[in-house]
Image (cartoon, rainbow, N blue to C red; front, side, top):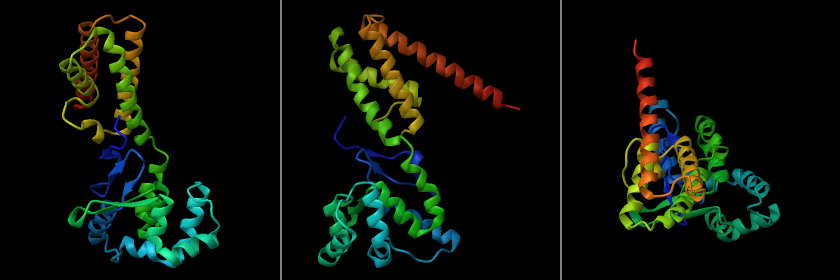
Length: 245
């Protein structure tokens, strides 16, 4: 898997805005601001800017203790405050490694560590905090990373079949159809945590079957994947029928 991938999952939907998250865990603060702006119009919330939340001195101690407990910072509170006085809050957070900006001009956006993101969410509005606090506990990013790593393991397993480039592409498409019901570039980066976990388990099963010589050719592998697709398709169709009045 690539060192860093941007995930745009429905599991990160906040008032109609999908909050981007990379596979290093960082969440996009610019997306959070867009989400707040949109919801504030409907809910008559006051105008709030993330920059103002970050620069509020009343939040410095909260940031420090949240980051200290997560072992992102090991200095004392006094040293942390001195760093802010000397460099400013954003440069201090960048130096600690919990905040960054990417892009330039109209494409520039800010990203931060999940712990810091949740703290900012609370300061923006409790309703936002209520939705984002659970993101710390879910396994979306872990599942995305594992799905990528296990796909590598699966492709290593099929090397015994001497596959060509087209077969690797066919394998990826087959897996995507089983899990997502369709194939398109980057589809795994928009999957839910449950879908990525399903993909992870599927890759494990296929790799194990190949390594144990239960599957002995690429043609046989595709045949087994087709069977799984048909089974899942029939289950989905049965569920749809049961929902009809």
